[in-house]
Length: 185
Length: 401
Image 1 (tube, each protein chain N blue to C red):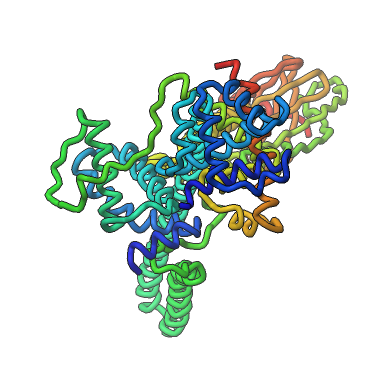
Image 2 (cartoon, each protein chain N blue to C red; image 1 turned 180 degrees about the vertical axis):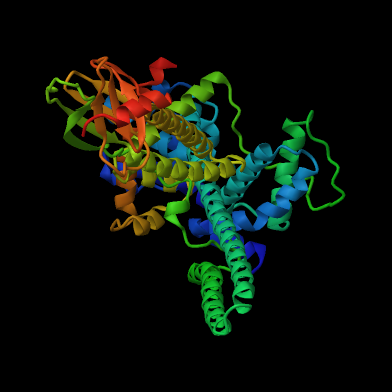
């Protein structure tokens, strides 16, 4: 099975995630170990890289330009060199990485933005815990970029228009939950 | 007309048609002109006023139409920043539109973060599960090796015994061969059974995908450090036997002796010691498994803390048991007495004969326990004093039965 095929399975079957994870871990850890010997740090980095790959797999605009192994190695290597410069050095003779791959999570925000995102997360969790379909609808539309018809099929709605109406109600509820706490920022 | 123009025009028509059903009719270019005119203003209220004039709707209706359109266009843009639309290009200059885009962009970040956490938790649990399985394999292998070694020793012992027997009995050969065969069959069964269980369960857990899959043995709940260990202590009560016996006294020449009796209660705590020793062994073995697990690096911090907590608990329990054993052993051959009753504590095995009681003329009191004499005092609670003085022992032996 080619790496692109694996990525296609990954984009629609979450249970495949741990299998891909297990498959690439040994090589990646060996590759990274030459740069930095902290097992916990490397393990955490590998998990982050795999999560990134999983999220990219779901993004229709993402194109894998190398093997999955090379992609993971590159992502981890760059993170190690960028963030742990004082404890990492590139000593591997293996060239199984692509220096042009600089993908990573955008997770460093200013204090105010961080506070806003936390509020939104809190509101999303509230929606999730309420047990209604709001969380799923909003997630599928905004995060997974599914169409109304796709969401209707997945969540057993009659058609896309019904989903759109429900989505509007859910968005309104989400905004109410977020903005009621906005004063605290 | 290209797709992008139709989007903002379409959305606008839909919003307006809730209030003016006929608004589905005008040409797209006309609608687009209206939009461009409205959004050439900078503030929300200016745009709403312009819209109100153009469409001849109420103030509240124009605000609602504006809100719907801006919300929809902000979502479109937040999901795809490269989306081209002349109305969006106009709106990008206004703060109220930027605020909406910001909300939806940050919503996307919130989802990403939420998902990232969820997936990382999933991977951590997956790693822990693999580690559990690996530990189970290690424990099974260790047990396998131990049994093999035991059988090897047993075998060598049997051979050694046979060598002795063979020189004395002719039938020894037949008995040895039969015994040896049984031992070998038992050894083979044990040695094959353990890996067979592992292989059987591995074959039943094969994945459908081509990616590599780790083989994991059947989970042995009783040996897993992650299964809850029962620390409950159900110490049995000590066994008590009680007997009313005649106090043996020295012969009073010329005088009759007053008959006296004493209630002798013997408290046996050997059953308690046996129970404590058993729990000590069980917990000791559990500690060994925990020590092994402690040396493995856990990705999931809670699992590591749990092993450490269990270890602490187990070690505390072992200390408690040691103290309890010590307390029971310390009580061995102590007594509690009144004038008419004595309670003797024995931590060893049961006495083979009944305890006898003695009183000498000098008002000293003694017990005979398993052919040995001990002095005790009335209304005391202390250690029995063993008598080693041969004259005293002779005196006691001469007491009248």
